[in-house]
Image (cartoon, rainbow, N blue to C red; front, side, top):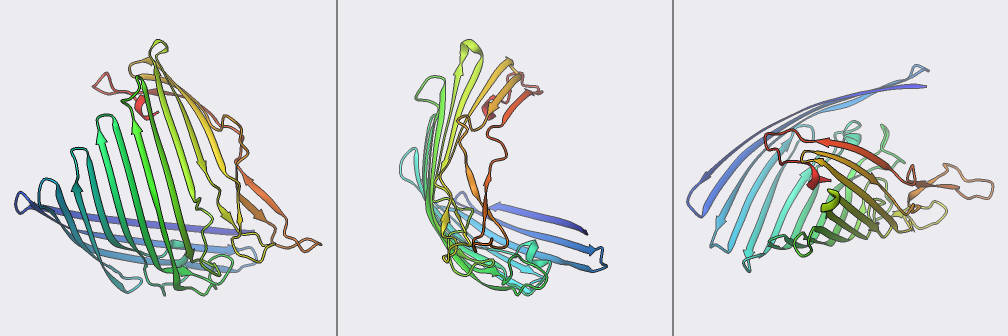
Length: 354
């Protein structure tokens, strides 16, 4: 038996000031101050006790300028300075974005930015000998908006450096930490939404492809993390049936499966779960303009989705680590709810959010 207690107290203060220098130039300056105090106490019945924690104060200031070169071309340039008392480290992060309107409804944008963040709580409570984790983002975006229709396409590349690594199964008080981790992520995101082409029908489709690898935590090499699926697809439809005062919807979510580590194989993170698929249904009945009776069911087809595998800590008599699949807790989830919107505008309701 053991007793574990922890507490975190945090404060965030922020100020922003903006001024138009002309019709084409606007300058914004601001400052942030974050304070975090974390304490954790661990006690065993045997009398052993261990305390950990940290105080981290982060001060940041930034300035950015919006410049409108013409009605079709604009830029935003910024610079952010931050300092961490705990890490005894200062960082200067430049950011730049350009936007060009190619037509009445279409626009391209290009962005670059450096970003930093302090290591996670589970690391800082054991050591302060870290640097900030850092990433550089490169993003190319195209967006098309017309009445009732939206299309967005985005390609990106992200470079990670100074990620936290440790030499134990999990991060713990006797882990040897360092900032030698690195990684990258590149991919595309596509999105299409249409509520104008078909009467009473609204639908949207989103697709993502990602190629990413990281060497961090206790990874022996750079591989794709277990939370990443290469391909993800989502299709959502909503149809309004006037005679029934009802909105029915179907949502189908799919991804190509995620990697996992099989200790029975020599290669690290060499396994991959089967593809995930979830078809859901919803029905919203308009009792009155501001009252809605709502019903939904997830995974209508009862697909046996597997999110990963949990392996035994020790091998069996045959030298193999037995495993158990991590599945959804139930084949389907049912939800029944009643939504009542109270506002001065008697036409408002939650139908668009259901």
